[in-house]
Length: 254
Image (cartoon, rainbow, N blue to C red; front, side, top):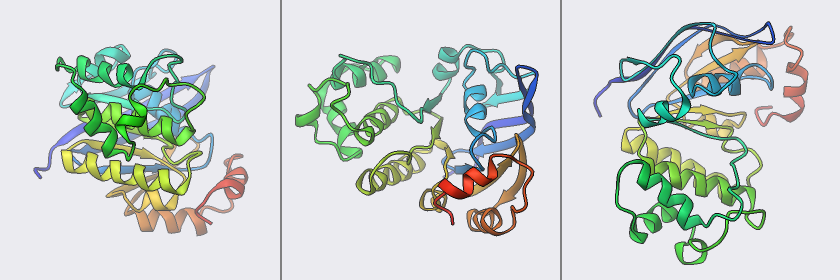
């Protein structure tokens, strides 16, 4: 696969309520690359995702975001999505009352493609969901968290984005769903989609090509996933970040 930068972030700074959230944040992402972003809770990982996607309230104070060499600073979220970057939320929206078929159809329509059940079924099968049992089900609280996440991932597969941001895709899912999500990440890589993987899970981290460690809104270290994991577990103490002790209690790294 050709090496080509699909996303470039240069000196990104974000403030919320006059508090610094991201400071001089810089990294790039290549086509088909998986970049893991790790760090303690509250260190700015999700805020980074929201800023990249142009969500209201997360407008950067300074810095540059380029998607396929086009500056996307200040663009609304829907325009950024049209240009090929999307976000899979940590807690997927339920779209109460909407059928799985209709939800997935929206992804095809957004790409100007004709909707047909075969394409929808293929996307569900990629995330290990049986189409005949789910296409006509409603997206509501009868679905488990793992099922909702996999259905959302199916919708993103149908979009064929240039970049996908996965915000804690392993959160609140069982081992079976975790394996399905791991396979989807492999599928994204094979299709040439760049993946920003925000995670606390060491198994997820091992799927990455590179990793960055975030502390207090700054990039503390960049490198190979194994090196970053080792540094995070054994060398990040003592740490001034007040969220670090909470991380030690909930992280699967230790």
